[in-house]
Amino acid sequence: MAETDKPLLIKRYASRRLYNTETSDYVTLEDIAGFIRDGREVTIVDLKSGDDLTRQYLLQIIAEHESRGENVLPINVLTDLVRSYTTQATSSVPQFLAASFEMFRDSQSKWMDTMNSANPMAKLPGFEAIQAQQEAFLKAMTGGMAATSGPAVKEEDDKSDLDDIRKQLSALQDKLSKMNK
Image (tube, rainbow, N blue to C red):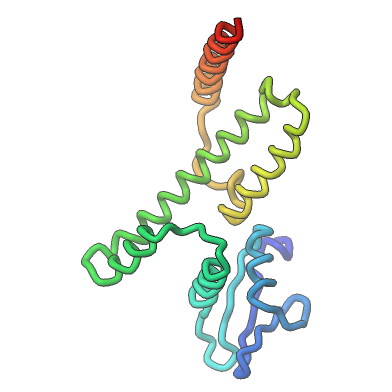
């Protein structure tokens, strides 16, 4: 197993400093966020007790980003999350969120695949830069797992979806050309 396939172990000392066991140096929350954005799994444990603190620190990273105006979570979603802690729905919320993000990763992956294959827009100037930005966004939103997660899709389904998209694109191009006349 390659070193980057194993979760990166971060130890929290009594002084609350975070220690990267692979590089033997101290790290910040922003460093940990960077590891995660790069697709690395991270585990944070208390050195003395051995308690897993990963969830606590991930929530802290999210809170810091939100407080700096990097809003990803709408107020209504945050409100619903708070409500879910005080209701019977608590047991179903984690599964729902996990399934939702899985569907998001799958749809983003399919969209990226479609954009990469036989796309007439690929010939436009600057398209590669836009595509790189989309891939970076997707990687940031999914933890770098967009292309690797989810069940395999049958090739026939992919061809059918691609054919449908091509037909829709052709129809749109026809409408645009008629509007320009």
